[in-house]
Image (spheres, rainbow, N blue to C red):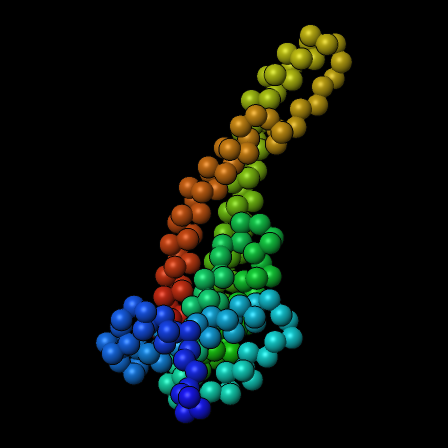
Length: 196
């Protein structure tokens, strides 16, 4: 009993599935280390003082390769179009992590510059689309405002953003043009995957 080693959760799951003998050593290693890389990336994104570089340096060879793959996968998944201010900080942190994970820092900085340009352009487009939707609803509300003022005999203020349907119209517009930018973001992510 003392010579038996404790089996990992992965080994136990594979035994239950009856696949232990079917996996190559490389596939087994990938299945073991990629999830660890996922966890490292999640911790890096959550904790400002987590030293991802130091954690990665604890590993050598193929395990380190698979860890980097896992970390990269989660970091890329966490880079999203900044439709609102909440995504900006998360994107920055994920980009910092990508620079740590990639060996070709110069290429990563070039790609990050491309991404910043895409995000800035996207944010300007979002602002423009929002103003367009607001103007559209303001024009519709103007007729209702005039009718109410004539009926009540007092000035009336109508906020176009609080009109029925404004939010739905705005979200529909945002969804329509975000699809184009999402495609560009996916292309960018593919470029990152190719960087060593």
